[in-house]
Image (cartoon, rainbow, N blue to C red; front, side, top):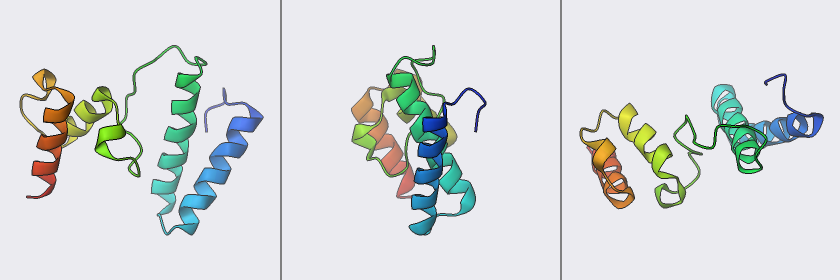
Length: 101
């Protein structure tokens, strides 16, 4: 947990992490989901200067509900060629095609 989080954000992180552990996620997955959730809310509320995400989005969120940046980051992890020129619907199709292999 970053030192810049408020007490409320730290409580939210712990709550989300515990919830994910109860759902059967590993410790590492639960921590990642919780941190991403808190950081995304901080970005959306303007508490952090970086408006774009460095991650791939919440794994529980459908591809259609993720941002183009998140989809491009996911495509990069999957080594999908031509991703920087793809539109959102093309990224979603490419990711799904790659996952089905």
